[in-house]
Length: 312
Ligand SMILES: O=C(O)CCC(=O)C(=O)O
Ligand SMILES: [Fe+2]
Image 1 (cartoon, protein in one colour):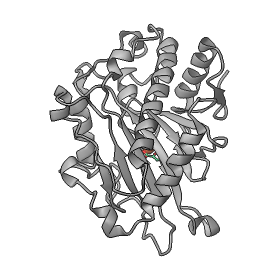
Image 2: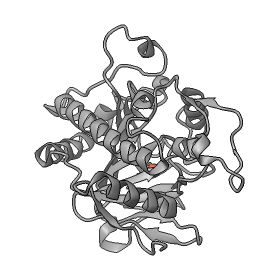
Image 3: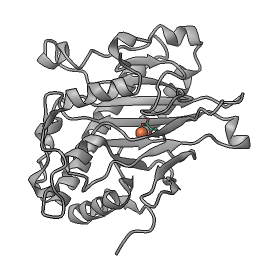
Image 4: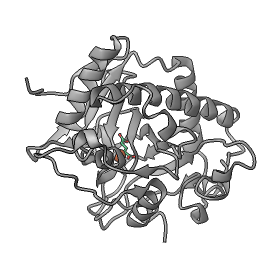
């Protein structure tokens, strides 16, 4: 049976059923909607309140935390800075990036994973987003274990792949559209770079995926649910069994254009030194290996950061 619309999956379902459900949803759409994900709702509410308060600070204050030398990997990236691969205008968004806190002196620290920077205001920002990062990291591992089952791998297969992974939590603000955007959009069509993305906030409309029939399909999760999508690294690892689907955030019309939109994607990455080599389970007579040359996760990432204008 082929799926017609994005199903709503429950993480309370038993492992095998959930694995089958998310695998089918990913194969068909590259996306899934997941409720009962177990994220603490009080923590998530605090995270939204802090996000709103931070982005309401004066532009000059926010720009103190802009660190172009870190390729946008930590801290603040101003409005209009990120340009989707192949697009010619900056997206109508500003964002803040949080990474993993590594133990002091960890070898990955000196290379691809800079230490976090935290704003002086609002109070509680660092504590709440450290907790959010840890919880999304934990939830992401559970999702990956179900994907492993679907692919016929041991459930714990991804654990060493994502241990000390270079994941990033992004707080996104799309300000109200007050003037003619001259062709720019909130988020131009793009694929995500990482393994999987866990997204909160998509109940505020605008997110659309490019379906394989060439039509844009709105993604409208129930309140509080996670939208999860396959990124380019998982697509490559699975030889396109699980597709990384192009998506965008379109500009709203009329009343909604007067409102800010906020969202919170967690980009789950492998360790920087993990080598992405096509899974033998995903190669066959009808599906020759598209990627005979493995690539290190960090080399893949650095190339893509140059593509989107965050790195020179
Ligand atoms: O804001 C959203 O709903 C999606 C954001 C997104 O696709 C991204 O930041 O990669
Ligand atoms: Fe995205």
